[in-house]
Length: 213
Image (cartoon, rainbow, N blue to C red; front, side, top):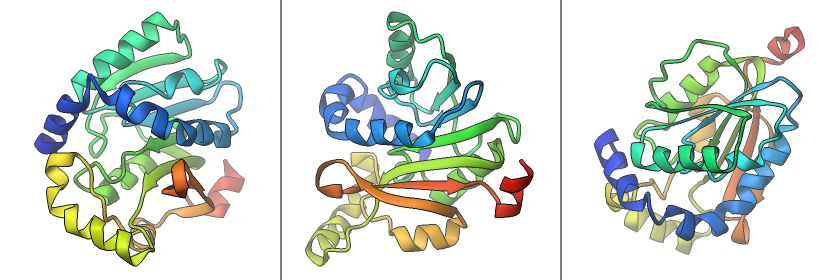
C-alpha cells in the first residue's frame, strides 16, 4: 500500500462508494458517532472522511473538520455538505492523514472510520491522530482486523498481496496493532454485519493527562 495506490483505488470507488459501502457500513458509522458523547462546542476531526457519509450524523453543536487524500471522494463530501446544509461542518480538506498540516492539540475528538487498514503506515496515522488530539481527548477507530477464525484469516492472508488493487489491507492484526500503536483503549466492541468490524474508543495520553485536561 502506498499513497499512489490508495488514490487510484478510491478514484475507482468514488462514484459507486455510497451504493456499495454506504448501507453495509452505516451501523458502524452511527455507533461511532453515538459513542463520541459529543459536548457543545467541541472540535471533531474525521480522518478519511471520504464522500462524507457520516457528516450528517454529527450533532449540530460541534465543529467538524473532515480530511481525505482522495479529491474525487471529497468533491462528493463537499456537495453533501452544501445540499444538506451541514453548517456544523466547517472544513472538508484534501490532506494526507499520515502527515497532517494541522496544529497539535487542535481537536477534542479524532475519528477514523474504516481508514486504518487503508493507509500505507497505520502506526504513523495513529501518531498523527494523537498529535492533533488534545491530551485527555478521545480517539475513536472503527476498522476491520484479521479474523480470529482460522479459515477466514487464511483467506484474508491469501488476498493480502492484492491490497494495492482493492484499496485496503485485509489482514491487519488487532493485538499487534494495539501493542505497537500504544493506544489507551477504554472500550472495544463489535459492529456491522456479523460483528466483522471493531470499534476502539481510546483516551489520548495517560490517565493523568485526562484528569488535567
